[in-house]
Image (cartoon, rainbow, N blue to C red; front, side):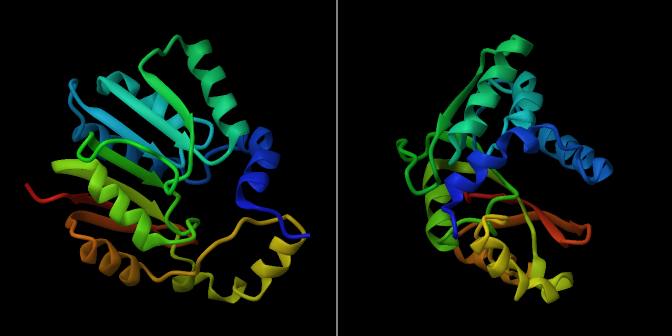
Length: 208
């Protein structure tokens, strides 16, 4: 039987937390690019934080991070990691993009890493992110663009979803994602793609 996204990620959280990073070189490049834009007084929001590894890595570079995920199990693991590492400026919150509540222009930076291809409504998600960012704020995303290189998986994924082996996922082209982000009001500062999933890493800015 097909499961909800939250149920899927709750079920795989433990094994997900132990997985090795698939492309360490690209991951380190993303970290370095992001940290070069961070400042000690920044308030950062991460949507889809998973088990919190990236948020905890960035914690030293900013004032505060709110790390959210739809999965309560992912959030529990993230909190445990933070406690073990003695990190006290990362706040883990269970919430989807649609459910998260905060005042307009609350954050200097928003991260959505490996997320936009998983949300049910990208336009709403992008509008929410735009609203939450301060003018001049930075939006950093990484999005699997499966239609560019792995298009042949399109008929397979629904069967995997039915048996609870895959989450809901959109098949996207990189150019499509770039246009959507620009249409949401963001200014493209830098982007590049990598890997079999043709993941699009993008640094964008909310106009001043």
